Length: 170
Image 1: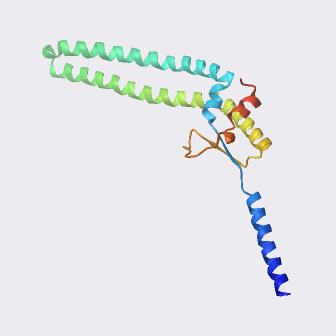
Image 2: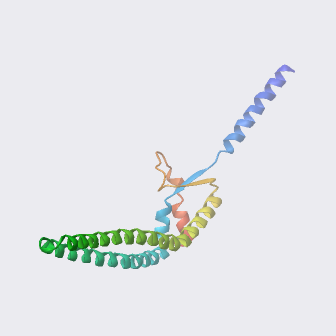
Image 3: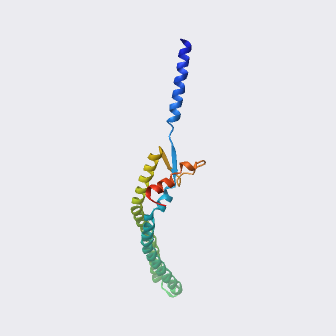
């Protein structure tokens, strides 16, 4: 009877260990940014963002030219100016610099908002494809390899090609 109990206990342990080994999660990875960049719609988004950015760049360039012109003029004429005129001109130059800084900050915020607005549909589409591929291939977790540096990463767990195929990208 004691031997039977020992054998049964050992059998239960082996079954538990076997089930634990089967229950381990499968982990895959993908370069999510590269996947989005490979999508045909990404070229349109990039072109739109470049055009949008150019508006801000052109305005900042105009402000910079104005600042340089007025600064050069001030340097040439400051010796012959009264103290009041000199102070007024310095205040004007400082005001232009402040406007440039404020405009640059505002432009960056607007650009970031526009970028998020345009990239969100691509990101959602890519995420849906990656989720579908992960489910098909039995992966419990998929890591973004742009945010994580792997020490060891088997090529078989890279879901890039499967996700591209799911999206119809060659």
